[in-house]
Amino acid sequence: MIFLNTSAVIFLLLVGPAPHLQIQPERLQKTLSKGHFVEAANELQQIVLQTGPSLKKPAPAQEKMLRRAIETTRRFLVEKHPAQDRNAARQVLCLSRAYFPEDLPGIEDALRVGGAVHGPELVGERVRRFPAEARQAGIQGAVVVEVIVDQEGCVRHPKVLKGVPSLDRAALAMVQSWTFRPASLEGKDVAVHYVLVVPFKLSDPD
Image (cartoon, rainbow, N blue to C red):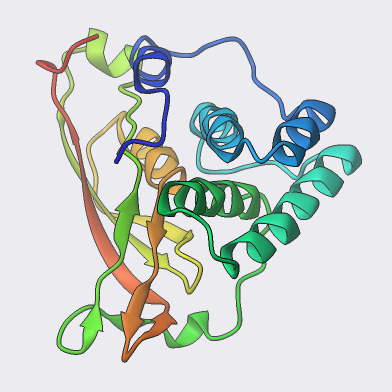
């Protein structure tokens, strides 16, 4: 399933930096109040990708709206809703949580995938952003990133294991914008260490 407006997002991400994007609390609140989680996820994901791996603390009004979004989506996810709506709500949850450094309890006990531990599953697409400067310089390659995917399916503590000059920062921003269905152990959601390979190919379309 695809939960993003793919053509618009991929165009934005591959052509290079766009005008500075900011969270608009009133619009986000209106979107969420209507249950339009896909639209909200698209907007938040674009902002996270453009801003990069080090997100600044949001302004008070933005923080209030983000924390409200976290509460709203957590309530939504424990209810019975269609899978597509639940996945989009999970994206909003994780993209909102990306602004706050605190972790869920138990993340220090993150497990390794394998055996009885079933790995996380990506929600939506691996949207990409190929830095324009790297493309112009002819730089390509694959960046290997390790993350913790926590009990809510959110990416935490991304770090580069194997980097490529001029591509590492974009790779970190990309994986931070991704959301997963959580890993599980005996039917319980758990946090896991997870390794992701982020390819950058000059042959990819602009």
